[in-house]
Length: 98
Image 1 (cartoon, rainbow, N blue to C red):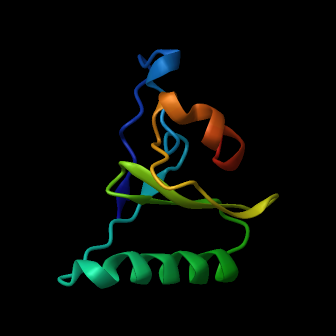
Image 2: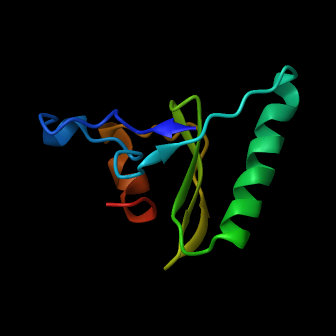
């Protein structure tokens, strides 16, 4: 777990990322990569159920978006291959903290 220091005040509009407004990043790793995604999704679902006031975003290696949870909207699964980058902003902008 660590503070999200990726966004910079100097970032231009096309340097925005889906996870910029999330204050904390939580990194999970497993020796067996075949179970890592399943375990991460299980933790995500448990957190969204036990702390429903907090927005969550599940990514794979900060490269692709998997699932988001917003208290006002619920859980949303992203299409496979959706990046957190500006190029996919139309896909994720309504499902992340802004």
